[in-house]
Amino acid sequence: MTACTVTPTPGTPTTIVPTLMPTPTPDTSTSSGWRTLRTGIAFRQLEAPGLPVQVVRIDPAHVRFVVGYDPTSPLTLSAWVARYGAVAAINGGFFDQQGEPVALLISNQQAVGYSYVNQGGMFAIDEQGKPHLWSLADQPYDGTPFVQAIQGWPLLVRTNGEAAYTDDDGQRARRSAIALDRNGYVLLIVAPGATFSLAEWSQFLASADLAIEIAVNLDGGSSSGLIAQSDQGGVRVDSFTPLPFALLILEL
Image 1 (tube, helix red, strand yellow):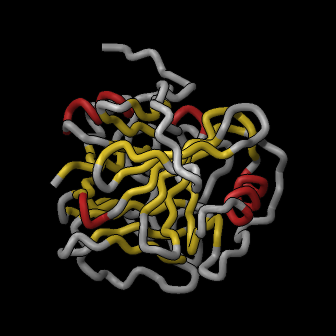
Image 2 (cartoon, rainbow, N blue to C red; image 1 turned 30 degrees about the vertical axis):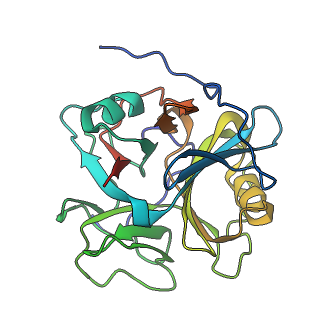
């Protein structure tokens, strides 16, 4: 793997300086801690050891999800945002030294790679623009056509809200994840400091007050990044390394 310290097993065979801390956001906080960045996109921070965890909440009714994919010309996350004019973005799953995904990826209905089997999770967008996220151990991918999709490993939070990964190797790194909450929002989540092992990351998200229904891990370490932009500020955690693909959120 390119960035994470743990290696999942697939089912089959211009320099930009990264920014660790979020850019300042005006004090428009609500009692819940969420700050609206633009219609359909909100942001909050969660206290954690070291740097705060950054969370962007997406209302899928107001945006369009796109998986940008270019293994021959990988880009930092901020460069992906600039290429697409995205209002938010997060890094995707794991990739090899050639920039190819180690699991299944679907970009604009074009599938690349092979699905994880009996492990991990899949985030997908159907033809109506509706997001789906599920455990591939509970429901293997059956070839259903999707417009966009990424897969991650391991599953972090199960559909009953419990921590899904408990194998603690003690290796801490930057972490990223994608989740669905019980209200149907998509959550993009990054820990910008080397704070959590995978087991600790799983437990942290399961116990956070985010109403997470299900969450899956994305590529960590130098690949992790989260950006959400607006005229009122936002969050910018750039990847340290160029990425062959990223999940981008565009305005309708």
